[in-house]
Length: 116
Image 1 (spheres, rainbow, N blue to C red):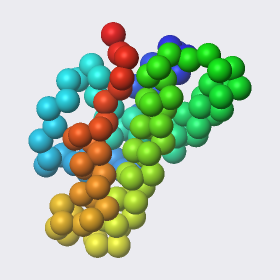
Image 2: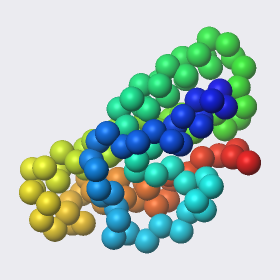
Image 3: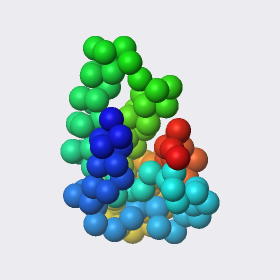
């Protein structure tokens, strides 16, 4: 599971090269921060699989399911935000509802529990 968590941290972004929330202030500690680049389709599928493994085994640290859920939810929010930006054409994206929801997630909730 530690290898999986490390993999999530270093996966490059395959969806959206530039950060969507670059203009939003984010004071999350770097060592626990989930970056926009971490939120890929591949990472979401790996997190989904890992949750299934936790369900099967019943063995997990308290923070593992929470961290995995954040990867899945964050990816889904990012995908919606990117779709909204594509429809708008990159104009005034901060005002888009889906972008606001994603950036709020990045600023308020995109951090790992139980990191050392």
